[in-house]
Image 1 (cartoon, rainbow, N blue to C red):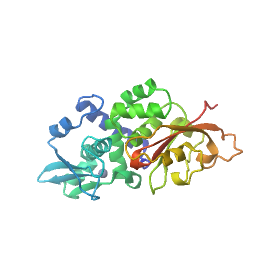
Image 2 (cartoon, rainbow, N blue to C red):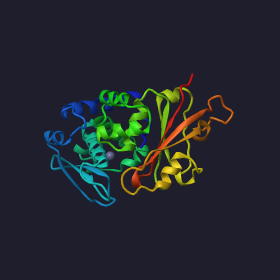
Image 3 (cartoon, rainbow, N blue to C red):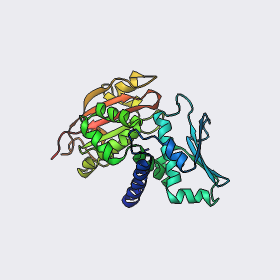
Image 4 (cartoon, helix red, strand yellow):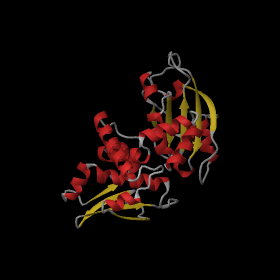
Length: 281
Ligand SMILES: [Zn+2]
């Protein structure tokens, strides 16, 4: 995450496919995938498979089987496990992916979900998972019920039983306000997700150093230092400037402005920051 740039029609096609699967699963929030898996004759197992994969879709003796890896602090039905199941269902429901397995061209597909940015196939399955777990209409409604900000985003993630990270990507896509999320993961480059409203205003390229290297006083730095080992830390907030977070927005640019930075520590998964812009012209 976030996703490699799929073409708009392809994204829409996959989103529609996922939302049809959501309706088929009963159309309730949070979505319960088990009956859908059964109905399609897919068998399922979860367990600690080490670092072999996050999830895997296997085709053997004309049957499909989903494996869901629940290593470390994970458990069946955790937000992470739910995303993995949604991702594997994506490989099943997207014709090209399923047919590649069924034809024997590939025996099994091993998924590494955080590497979605490197592979179209993985990005497509992530897009499916995202819309299967957080269908657009219900998601927009849930976002509108909340005040804009990280607290609201986390409330929405509880409603849909999705991880803060996966929710942040959908939140930024769907909310009407100019905002951006920045996800800091241990030892990896932070990734930005930028709302369409903000992109339209020319804030295209988010940048950030690793959370550990952020200046003192930044909300993300304070969240990083909070070192919550289980669950979420409190939400930290600080004023910030657009120039710090966006390449091509110089300090003297008319697009540089004071913004609000909110951040939370997501136990061992890193720090999620949300950047809220004032109403821009
Ligand atoms: Zn995959």
